[in-house]
Length: 235
Image (cartoon, rainbow, N blue to C red):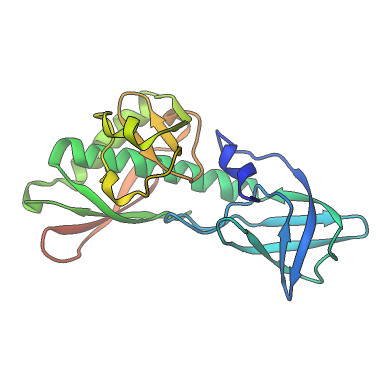
């Protein structure tokens, strides 16, 4: 599977260039033998960057797929069999990794203090939003949530990655999501934030919360009965 390389990487900031080979070309889309470009998924946007090869270079402007990841390139795609080097946009990747880890903090803390359940999220470079469902949303304080997030950022908790079984996760009190919605596969990629949160996730993350900039509240919007959309950005 050509997603293996990126899924095994942690931490995900500052990715190094990687080598691969073109195994398929479909118009402006190419498939590589292995890739570390992140495809859109799980609320996180795709990576961008460049693919270089002997005699040429193309920009990667979109990445999609799961088991078979496709890269949309701007320019003439290199032919099948070409050995290439992938260079990921480090600034974009690092911003998204920091935003994604901050989202895990927000979801865990909203659940811990107000029983909020994350029912949606969209990671962004400038701003990130999470949709939270509450039994009584009037008790929730978005300003306090941001304060709690910044406290945990300052505490510089270690962020680790592991592979665990679904049965193992069901016995871990730090898991905040509904595991009944997850397919019963033999092993899940899991992101662990110290004493705060354990969550199955294929996204990109940082090595410790201390590298995340201070967050500020962007906006709060009602999304129906018991549901609020909370957006934050970096200061």
